[in-house]
Structures are given as C-alpha cells and as structure tokens.
Amino acid sequence: MLDHDGKSCRPFLTFDHTDGGGLVGEGRIDGQGGQLIDGQPVSWWQIARQAQQVGSKQNNPRLIVLDHARNITFYHITLQNAANFHVMADHVRGATFWGVVIDAPADARNTDGIDPASAEDVTIAHSFIRTGDDNVAIKAGANGGGSHYISLTDNHFYWGHGLSIGSETAGGVQHILVKNMVLDGTTSGLRIKSDTTRGGEVQNVTYENICLRSNRWPIFFDTHYEGRDGGNLIPVYRNIALDHLRGSGGEAVFNGYDAKHIMSVFLRDAVVTGVSLKQNYATLIPVVSASGEQTKIFDCTSAWLPFPQ
Image 1 (cartoon, rainbow, N blue to C red):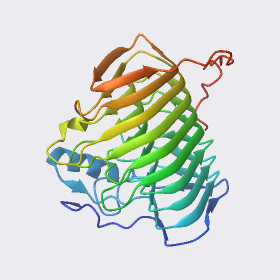
Image 2 (image 1 turned 45 degrees about the horizontal axis):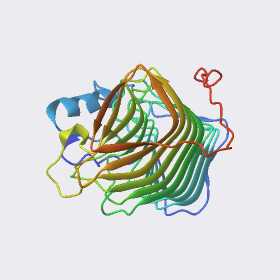
Image 3 (image 1 turned 90 degrees about the vertical axis):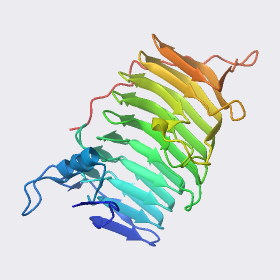
Image 4 (image 1 turned 120 degrees about the vertical axis):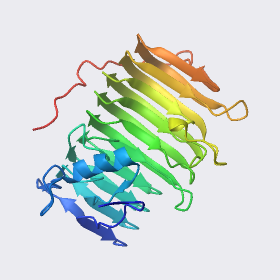
C-alpha cells in the first residue's frame, strides 16, 4: 500500500471532462478513512501516517476528483472522513461550492477540504470546513497552467491548516478574493507557501473582512516553505492586500525570497494584537483612507459560529 508513486487508487467519484452536473441536496458522503480496510489490520489514515514515517507515499483514494470539468455545482452536501483529499478540482473551469460541510479529524493526514488546481472561475461560499490538512488550498503546477478568478466568501474554517495558496504556484496564481472569512482554530490562518522547487508568481490577492482566533500563525506568507529550496522556480508574491482584519496572538510571517524579489503586502485596518512578527524581504505598506472617505468599523464579535452538527 506504500510506494513512490502514490496514485494507484481511484477516487470514489470522478467528474472527468464533464460539462454541468454536480452534487445537490442534504445528503452525506462518508469516505470512512478511519475504518479498517476490508481484509487489512489498518485504516487509510494509519497508512498515511506510515508513509510519513518511512518517507514513502500513500495510495489512499481521494473522495471526489473534478478533472477538466466545467460548470460544476456542489450545494448543501456534506463530505466527511475522506481517506485523502475530499475534493480535488483539477483544470476546472466554472465550479460553485455553496453551503458545503466538510468534516475530518484534526489528525487525519492529507485530508484537504477543497483544492482548486490550475482552475478558473471557482466560488466557495457559505461553507464550513474542518480537516486534518489544508481547509482549502489553491494550487497551480508548472505543467497545468495558472489558477485565476477564485472567490471565497462567507466561509467558516475550524481545525486544519488554514486557507492556503500553494505550495505549487509555478503556473501562477492571481485575482483571488477572500471576503468575510472566519478562521477559528486553524493552525495557520491566511497562508501563501512555496519554494524554488515549485514557485511562481502569486499576485492580486485580496483578503477582506477576516476574523482570526486561536491560530499559531494567523498570517503565514513564506517563499522558503519547509526549507525546500534548490530549484530555479522563484516564488514572487506581489500586490497582496489585507483589508479589515482582526486577530490576536501567534506569529505573523512575511518571508520574501531576496532583495530582488520583494514581497509586497498592503495593509488597511489590519490589526493582530499580541503577535510576534517575522519579516524578511517584505514590504508592508499601510493604506490610509482618502480624506472624506467614511471609515469602516469592522468587528468580529458576531462572527464566531459553532461547527454545524
């Protein structure tokens, strides 16, 4: 069940080169990642941990894969306990995830919620996600093209690794809007991660009305992710905007690549109290409201909602 490829198992559901369709309703799909595999003394999640310990790869099946699909809708569906990623959206053009609930234990390795990769025109809205890895990860591999025009609005994330861009960004990621986002107990909050083995341009990303609580890294923008350098694909992060943000505690990381590739982040009413700051090759640019412009009062008091049961 372990090898150096990790691609032997097919997903439970695949939308392959389809146009239209999706999953709609109040139903539930359970990947049973924590259950013993038929005829085996281990679960899929235990296999994932074994692979991590020996430096191999798991052959765990993803729950749902969208492959070169168009105009897909997921509405009010619940996905839980995937053996691997819950939804992988690869080369998708037009997808809406609305009112989706995704649930997996915090220690279930590689159980990402929704991962758009080389995708365009994707909306994730009014959804509740807690997982053992990235709640959402936007990716763009070197051979797959970029990810563009992706919006996340009115979502609540709980345990998990947060809202990520990367680590694959070689194809380019741009025109991303994150609005009315609550990150309650995620390890990282807002995260952009890459390195020279898979890096590329990440630009024109706007985070607006963001509420953060109990995060180890409320903001984590890193171009040397996990120290995996040695390639020639330099990550460059430009025109990142933090507009009305509230959080407290933890460490905020702004780690640009070098003096020739400076990270630029614009801050408007971005307040994280009691936070330690790590800043290298990054310019943090305060944005002051124009004279006469009404000052917005942003507050997170009513943002904290329990995970739906």
